[in-house]
Image (tube, rainbow, N blue to C red; front, side):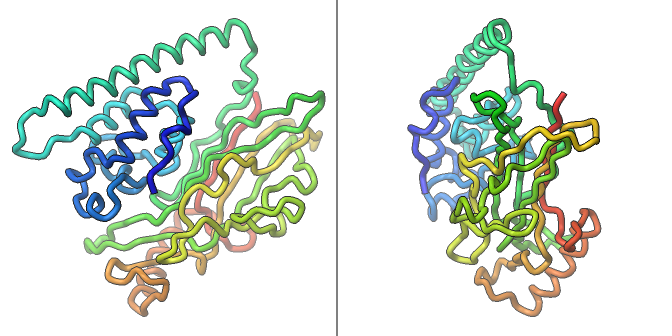
Length: 327
């Protein structure tokens, strides 16, 4: 469903984000990229926009990144901004320049330029007048994602305002059904019907019963499990696959500093899934019952996936992971 254009009105670059949402909800440019999607939905989805961004030369814009643009939580850099404009204001082949499209493109490009200047000014003042607490946490490794299925990006842990307050661990997690193409050219869809989140912290310990989905904090998208939580929602009605942003604004857990003898301070959040948790769907059949052919294809695809990725102690396949370390 269309997103609320009021969500990011107060952030730096709010005019750019507002225009992005406006064109997203209106499906600007979608008919040129995917006529069927335009006729069916009338507005963009994370999947269709990610495909269009790849066409525009900016591949790797996973659904989580696109979602962060929609809520005004992450500022697109110049290369991705250019690709966004190319996607939204693509002119069909054989059609000459359209003054209206050029005007809209210039309007959105100008809004990005204004936001870029404003953000640079704010960041400069922040560095001069206040300590940048978030800067003491940096990414330790490149985030690991499974394209089209799951993306996970940790935010720098933030400490509460009270003296000796715990740190809050937050992440941006996005789940979807990814479209793939096999070596023989056949297309298929891969998703998850269940997943498992775990948190490992060196130099810290998890505050008792602070993990999202713990019995002390019931949550519709999570169920408590030993050493972690199961992700059980949100789901697509048509096939029961996980899809969307299960965390929203909630934190994953709280952590306390602890001297565990490691001499380092890192936080790692991982997403795993059992083989049986993967949904393999052929284009001809979008129901939840997998045919014998689909089952054989699923085994082949998962064998490749498992051979590339690590498994945890329970045999779950690594789907996504990110690590932050404290300087």
